[in-house]
Image 1 (cartoon, helix red, strand yellow):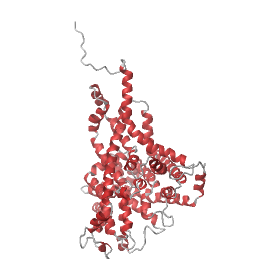
Image 2 (cartoon, one colour; image 1 turned 180 degrees about the vertical axis):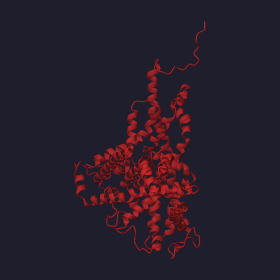
Image 3 (cartoon, chains in turn red, yellow; image 1 turned 90 degrees about the vertical axis):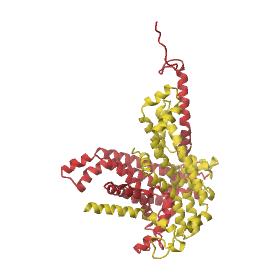
Image 4 (cartoon, chains in turn blue, red; image 1 turned 90 degrees about the horizontal axis):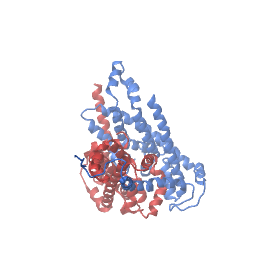
Length: 306
Length: 269
């Protein structure tokens, strides 16, 4: 007597019925509509140039992209060019002058900030604020503070050094400005890392009589290693690509003392119209960054286990 | 009292850290002659805003400002919209090639766009977009960060929530915007602030792609006037302060959001 009455007219979910294929097609269309706008831009403006830089590096192309195949000529020239080695050396030197100090200072300041109570947010904001400034604002401000004639720094210290034009001081000066500009980011990451270490570990260690430096060495440092290695990796990658500050503060001078890889590529590519040769430099940059990531990944995994 | 001493040291360090910014601001409201007076004064003898009136009248600062505001807002809106759509499909719709596509997008983290600056410029030039707003904007939309962050967020939402709406006949687009988006307002807002600051601060690409003085964005523009003034530090600092105001305000007002966005972008959240 009682026939079940379907409460809903919509087809039951699941793999049944003739609508299944149509349904799948519909789903694929929706997915495509959602994915394609981003994916198209991504392929066109990120992946394609990455492949094209490889190809260009084997040609004598100019800035229009037209050029003949020259095999490994660009790479041979690169290896025999003293300017390339200068740029590579300066880049490595700049990394040493920024990545390690920036990480250590970031950790030190994070620990200082973390123990504050009422002033914590204000102090953290003070350290982080430079990070949100455009690079040209940062360089303008420091050009002024470190001006050799009218700058506040030389006035206070009695120094006469022309910081950004001095063969010895130019690179360290740019490194210093970079640390001032970016350390807030590291402080933020370290604070997150430090807050994740459970207080119980410290309490247990304190019961065992550990304190001060011993606590830091046996508990803070090893537990912080994943964050530390992440920060170091981000630093290394960022500093390999250093361009803006150098271009704005020293233009690579004096006497190429601050010429770095990307600035060299910029000069060759955009000022000399040597697109092929600049592309070879780009490939070197890409390989260097890939290598750094791989080494760092291996290191962080080993560090994580110990 | 070593604790109090440490606090004192920390506060002094923080003050020293922001001092150059204070110094830039103070210089910008001094008459030009006073900026090079010895000894320097920590507060202007006479407060004078003529450096600001000068730069607004004698350089294209206003034009650059509008270029920056326009491009940064468009970039922010499009980055969020396109990334959200793409991430939603990757997370919630079972289509062929989605794992492959996600792998490709993750690989983007390893690719430094700076290394392929030459082919990128050649491409944008061939498209006729050098010196064009589209040439400035489009390449900046191709960043994978927001997609990855959104996908991680969407992955955490229980599928039952979307399924309920789908059974009621809601389209995927509707599910995305009326169910998934409201659940992610918080991260969307944080990402918006961080993306805006990054777009405003971008230097290298605008510097490469925009050649006409009137097309520059403000961070690139202010580097042009500096040399024109010679040693005129009140004017130089006035342009610097002007260029920095939006990001400083955004940061001071939305501090917590910036922190959250930075953490998410660094992969810590």
